[in-house]
Length: 408
Image 1: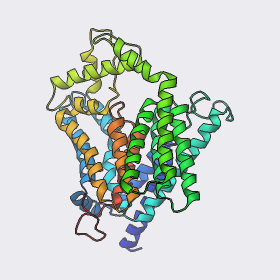
Image 2: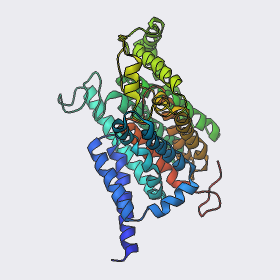
Image 3: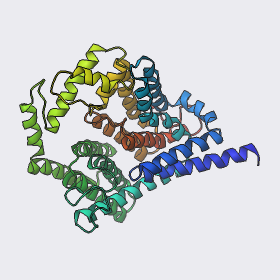
Image 4: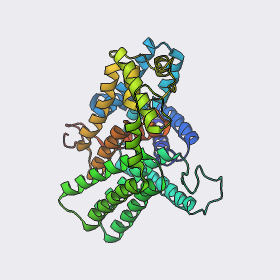
């Protein structure tokens, strides 16, 4: 077999595995890891690195993702915990896959297939979650219970994934070519929104859904063709979110916990713990503003910071900005924030309105979500970000090249 034939077959197989990640990311960590390993091996066998160099010279988003990963790699050099640094680097390894995914998703049909696989995973999760909520699933079969109908992932992760699914469904409703298709996607978007707001307790997903609802409303307004069903969808989603926050008392609970929190005192409430994490993480950052404590050094630095107090030790500040800032200093914080800016900025150069709005949705979801969780460090959310960015920016073409799109 000629090398070019082997290379082509390896690339097609790698692309198929990358497409399959759209289904496995919301469902199975084990399957994710197997597929990632196979993607890497097949990509190397197919000499995908040859096009990868071109991607890195032309695609600023891929540069930003790889740049943050390289900073984390470099941070091991000054970490007091190099072994933990290597372990931590593995948690962010998904960032290094962004250029690989970009090379595999150049064809529109492959990006469409990837979206179809993710939609299938969201629909399966929604169906099982509703069945679990209605007590129609045998106890122990799924992760959660009827009171917290988690399916494959815990409520925080599921709520973020389903919020993204709701946004995708709403965009498909907006762009549907027939009333029947528009109604179908609208109903699915509403069911996903209800799952996030009324059935799950993940506040991060609810906040992400609210931000995505605002972004969707903006996209509809910008398109100058506001369909009644899409406008109603935004209104209903907003009412559901606000109504749930008011009726459940969660917003009042957060406000009450915030007022009750006193700096330096331990707190058993989620809000109090997060405030303590933020306060002490900021103190570590102020002590090491330029280089941080090194990759993997957060846990040891935090333990030292709270030593002699009754405050809880943690390996995760539940804020990705603080997590990166403590480890890498101001350079890492800027690199991470700039990555989200790049995704938003260069979304305008993607080939279709749907892809442009989806990319902006990814930027908003993670820019907001990382304020409350270390999303890039978490396996599912971090891989989901890398996969989404790789799929969407596979359609990016630098000005002056074949298939050129408008500059951002």
